Length: 280
Image (cartoon, rainbow, N blue to C red; front, side, top):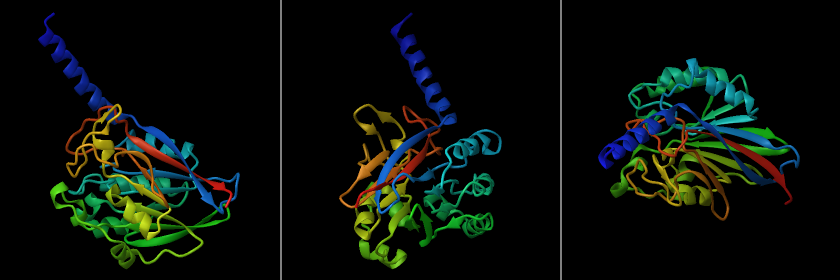
């Protein structure tokens, strides 16, 4: 067998692996210590992001069963559950109608939702289903002796431009859109784009939940994600847990894809975040 044939077979195998990887997902677990939270009574958050209309089983039954088995106290959706042309919006609404039966669901929009022609109708349907749609808004959640503020930032389309057109985000802009976070509350910020993590922390976010980067599309050992949707090679924020002095970010690899329907060493993710009490 010639080297050319072997290389062709390996390449074909890699493509098959990259395509088949779309149909499986993994629950990734994270732990975030929180001052003032009752010790021994963790608060469990399940985060979903970047579904892009993908369906796992009939009517997403595989995804729903998995979420149910994780026993979340709250579900946070960090955007891009649809595609900008509207594909996947019906499946997303159907999914939300099921998971609101499990616990409160908080939804912040990504760049695909805000570009949908029927965005307002989509948002209204989510609200009718019982979802807390956080379009530059916040909601309160009380659990395990702690007040939790859940904020959703709907970034304008200009915050998603390619690398040569990156816009700077200031704390003042966030304060204008979201207000000034109060004292004595643990602040969760659902912000689809992770690139502004440092600014989110300076604004007052204790925990940031993000997506958008799809894990870097492909992942390499030691190097991590290869390229972001903004066409940045080896982006600083690709997937996993990141910390600044005053805050933590959990960045999902996402559940779906668009444009490039391949995932190399980059399994779709449900993020499971346990908030645990720590001594003040």
